[in-house]
Length: 218
Image 1 (tube, rainbow, N blue to C red):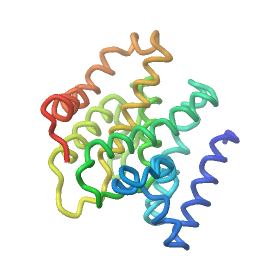
Image 2: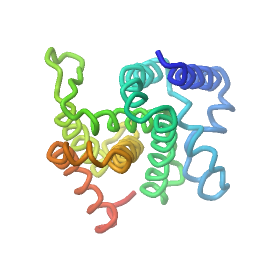
Image 3: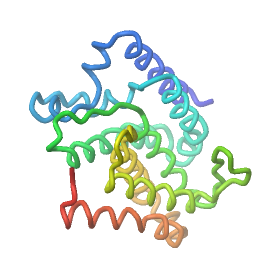
Image 4: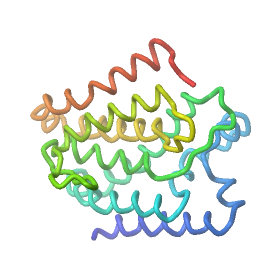
């Protein structure tokens, strides 16, 4: 495994463990609308990506990063990997801040935005890559998984359900950053995969229309 990937996973595990053991650390560095908007605690836009709710949450995110991180490292090198991962965490949380700006109580944690960015940067380069899903014996093509993932996340974000503790906005913002970064830095690859990327991006276009044109926000 690449040393940079090991370092990112190790740092995330250490900080998450600190959050598990010390509530004050968790509260001080989690994403929270009021703390960021009114107290200007902008570090939370990044630090929240290194905190997790529990071991299961942490394990799933790091497992996904373990599988798809090497693909992004190979395609975009170390600098690209770091930019995608950190940029996806920050943009995912910025999108959440915009979407829930009137809900000061809204809080979130987790590396899912960064992991989503890594995952979709990999899919942008290899849209036919097989992605395994629990309880489904046959891998799903990357671009089909992407279209389904975006469709579900957009629907759930625009139609929130009680007790749904998933940060769909952060996932979408992070995934969009990874996808755009891949297209911007590898335009020839993106053009060769334009059909697959176009199909996959349709739910994102719908979301953009609902959020930025119709102003359907929290």
